[in-house]
Structures are given as C-alpha cells and as structure tokens.
Image (cartoon, rainbow, N blue to C red; front, top):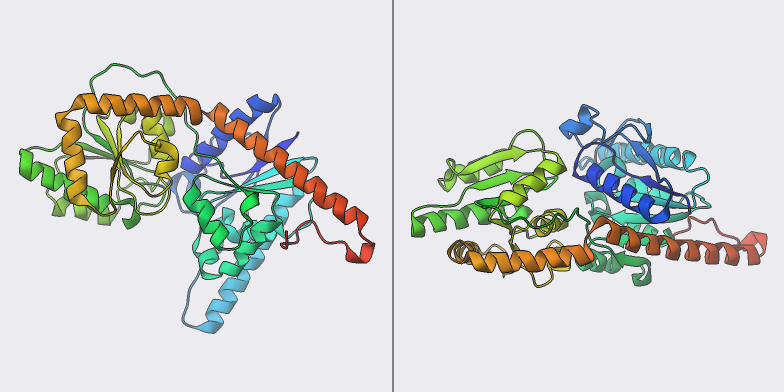
Length: 402
C-alpha cells in the first residue's frame, strides 16, 4: 500500500501532527510515506519564513486568496471566483503529484488546505483511494453548508472527536464514511519530580472560544481567596507575540506578574512544560483541544477541562470536569488540586495509562491504516460498479453522490 499525505509541512502544530503520523504509518506499513505540500497562507511566522519540518516533501507554491466577505455583491463575486480558481489550480497541482499512490490522505486545516481545496480535489477524477482528515471546519463551509456533501465523494473521512463527526453528519455526510481517530502523542514514562504552576494552550488560533477569559477570572478568584495564585504558562502556535486580547485580560485580572508567555515553541519544548506543570487547564467552549489534552496525559499533568472540543474523547474519565464559562467552578477545581496533590497524581496516572492504551502514535497509525483499507475497499467497489455500467452511465470517481 503506497500512501501519500497532503499536509502542512511547516514547523507548526499541524506540521508536527503530519510528521508524527507519517513516521508512525511508515513504521506500520514497513515502507516510506510521501508528502505533498504547499504554501498555506496562514501568516504563521514559521510558514512565512519557510521554516520546514524537513525538506523531504514534494513542495510547490501558488498565490493565496483569503476568504472574503463584502456587502458589495460585485466585489464578493469577483473575490470568491478568484479564490475558487486559485484553489482549483492548487487541487489540480496536488493531483499532478499523486502518481502511483494507492491512498491519498488530505489533512484539511484552513486556507490553502481548507475546504475549498478539499472539495475541488474530491471532484477531480482519481484512481487512488482518497481519505480526508478534517481537523477543523472553516468559514466557507459554514456559510455554504451544501458544499459539505462533497465529502461523500471521499472513500473515508477521519475526525478527531465525536463532536466533529456529528457536525459532519448534520451537514449531510454519510455516517458510515466517518471514523473517529484521536490526536496522537508521544507517551513518556512518568517521573516523580517536583511540579508547579498551570500550563495552558492557546491553540493555533488563539480566540475567545479557548476559555482564556474564564481562566484569568478563575485565577483572580483563587488569589482573592488564598492570597496567592499559581504561575500560568501560556503557549501556542498563534505567533511570536501574545494576542492583545489575552494581554488585556491578564492585566484586567491583576495577573501580569504570574503569567509566562512562551507563544510559539517547538512541540518537544511544549512537552517539557507539561512535565513540569502541576496541572493543565483547558476551559475550551469550541475549537479542538485534543493536542494539549493528549500532551498533558502523556506527560503526567492532571487536566481540568470542559466537556467540549474533543476533550471527553481523549480524557475519558481521567479529568476534573467543569461547565462552560464557569469561572467559579474552575477556581474551585484549581484549589482542589492545590490542596490535594494526591488527587492530581491519581488523575495523572489514570490519564497516562489511558494515553498508553489509546493515544500513542503507533496506536493512531494502526487505526489510520484500518481506515485506509476501508477506503481501498470502497474505492474498488465503486470502480467495479462503474466498470459494470454501460459507458454512457459511468460516473467520474469524484462524484459527490457517494
């Protein structure tokens, strides 16, 4: 089985995911896995400076047209038409580099790897089985939900949590096409070393749905009640500077002396921060938090989290759960772990055991290869059906009617 990934290949969180998956699938198959990559248009400093994970990929560049909304219908039409044309060209370039692949696996994120590229790619004829991992939904597919039916032209769709699976099904994606495969991680042995402070992940796009306002409010409550507050370490692939809204929240709640901004750091360095932390707090109300949850589980940091953003799929019962936007509940949970380190150790051990069973990259690769085999079976069944039809009734392999 020859596999090629279409994936971000810059040294960001998405690029690191692609590299880890590539290496694990290659181990599982006993052969190399190719990568096709392009400039993404995200504006990330590592992407702008062309900081690659490595040069072992088939890379090309094309112009990028950002998603554009305008009250002027003429401007909107022209910009949207140009965007579709550029992304059709990009999808065509992806296909021009897929020779001899049995499975093509598209990592859908945003911009050049977003839904417009994916949907054009799926509508093009292709002899390989096509798999799409939907890491996140973008504005375009939310504004034009009917386009999501194009996923039914894929031979398999992978998501990281049941919440995303249900979203796709509501958009009309066939439930039997969608597999839930969690975010993988490197699981290290637990070390009995001193821990202190809180680690928090601001994500690839640090916004209000990550619950940072709830966290800063909760820490202000902890300080008011205890006279002190644990230090907070913030990291994420959102750039080299902390966002203005986050700095403002820290100042509003009097936490300026307790926050360390690491911003964009390599994945290996991030894991080190989780190994030092007394706890990881993830009060997300949207987006996806599988990466920081899995990293915390692998590195012994007990987690306080909401039941959103894929967190239940990864953590199972090994977390302290809080409600959405519940600063009081979060403050109480933080204080509980500060006052009872034994509870934190029990949670961390349970989470670590779960990560070893379910979230290592080799386990993720095994699940992914099973999805590839299902995709190949579906592709062969569809090609057999086409071969049995009269020529005038044969369909393109990229038809979206499933």
